[in-house]
Length: 97
Ligand SMILES: [Zn+2]
Image 1 (cartoon, helix red, strand yellow):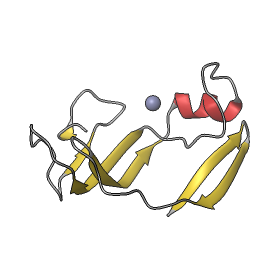
Image 2: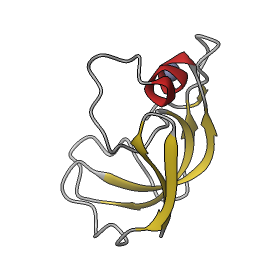
Image 3: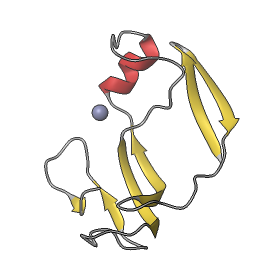
Image 4: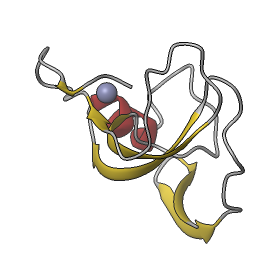
């Protein structure tokens, strides 16, 4: 799969990575549908996020589709679910991930 890696502040690299394996117990495999870019990402790009290390993949505000699930006692993720949480609002879209 393709990935954009922030190698160091100011330097992105497009690369390919291994596909993730099957999800384990309590895990879900998701396909990212949308991603927000926020101040944290901007600070990472600028190198002003003191607790970040590099290289890293940015993006932590996601809308996703659940494509596979591992065994879960709660049963809170189902294949085909669409989940997300907008970063500029406290209302959930779908249910939270
Ligand atoms: Zn953020």
